[in-house]
Amino acid sequence: MTARNTKILFLIICILQLFYLFNFRSGFRYEIIKDPFSENSGISYAVSNEVIESKSILKRNKIAHFNLSTKLKEDTYFYQRSLEFNYPVIAKQSSEFIFFTIEEDINENCEVIETGKYLKLVKC
Amino acid sequence: MKTVKLLRRVNISNWLNVDMTKVTLNEKIVFVLSFLILNNYLFFSLNLPLLAIKINFLIFLFTIALYYFKNFTENFFLKIFFLIIIFISLGTPAFEWDARSIWLFHGKVMFHGNSIFSLGDSYSFSHIEYPNLAPAFASGLAILLGYWNEIFPKLSFTLMFLPPLILINSFLKNTHYLIFLTVVFFTIGKFLFNGWVDGLIAIYFVSSAFLMYLLFIINSNFYRNRLFFYLLAFCFFVSLTLIKNEGFALLLVLFTAAFLIKLYKGEFKKNILKLIFLSTSFLPIILWKFFCYSKGIGNDYINTNILFNLSPRIGDLNNYITISYFLFLNEKFLLALILYLGSFWAKFDKELFSFILIVTSMYILILFIIYLSTPYDFYWQLNSSAARIIRSICFLLAFFGVYNLRIIK
Image (cartoon, rainbow over all chains, first blue to last red; front, side, top):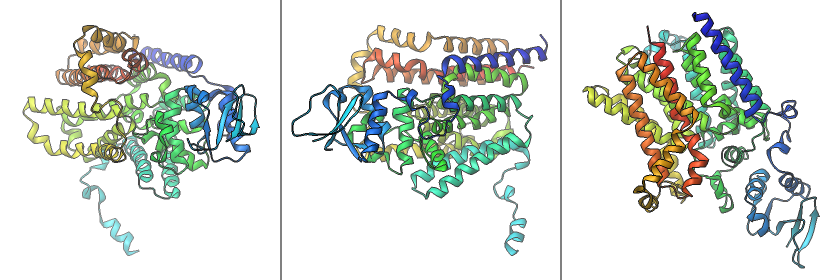
């Protein structure tokens, strides 16, 4: 095999590898590449709807810190993603603003601030 | 005017004892890029004004533009393939745990001007004791653009691949460089754009091993007489340790291998000052670990429980079989090993072969100790990390296999 043919062979291998990475290993979305620099680009692919809802509730109510109910804390995915996704709104054990799932019962002394599709924000 | 005249009289090259005429433009670009990545980290560490971070990142982008447009046809395939990787990176969300909850989250905290030590106990899942070179760079890009989102900050991780990729292009040309890119796509793959730092650790480890080989192992004075390559090695070594905890172990392995080979060849005294100079590259990570320790933040793996976890597992042969199964029985490791052995079977270079063999053996020994002493579930730990961790060794074997092919006459 001549040097030129070897070069063409490896060039084709490189192109095939890139195509494989692009098509099967990347999770590439055309919706994202259309506008990768917008503020909310790709969030629906990055985190669940529940996590996105927690952020929009906090933003609408201009809340600087929050806490999660015991049930939500036990959901490791929601717990970790909601904490990092909502930053710089911080999670605080002592916060009076607590997220509950929509099915959870809340204490009578607590006041519901907003109810969403998956979560409700309560002040206790 | 007086200052300009004075500057003209001063020959900076002589002052630095560097023969800059023998350093190519690409090598200078590699040095500038790797220096700016470290500079960005330093600016964050020193809490310098945002303007300094913005200027630093702008110079980084300008240097990349210079590399691309100075002579676009030079390194053509790297430039085109890298643009494709940037395109993929900008169309891919970061949804996996490591990327989101550790690396990009640290970047986000730094972007908002806070110390990651300000995070309370609720955030302990994020491993705040991990080194933060890549998150600081992501934060630098976000500061330049003025906001944070879920997509573009991880582009900075991809940009960090450029210095080692350009460096290797100075040593492997044409077909050999295409084979090298095949190896990069095969061993590093999706880690080029998914927001994890395992690909970065692999490529900085191999580049560091390569520089260590050029400066201390190879029987040629071409590189070891040039201060420029020591400075370049210093930047790569520091970067390696500040990307991820493994970097410290990997650099220690490289130094030990160079030390042993020099001792065996009886040339240790001749090189001791150079080794001491380069060993200062451990200082930033030692300072970081000391800082974490002073804040009462320890390491999950290296702590007082290591013997407590290790002792019940060390005597059971099945544990060694399980670790070997997870580390070695994967297609990347086996193909890299075949390439390495095949290459050295075709042309045996004793020094290079011994260097790589010592480095690989020592790192695998460290991996066995780490896995045997894991505080987590043994099987879960192997299943979740072994294939990732061994990538550095896969890439090392495959790269030096390709490099050895290059020197076959």
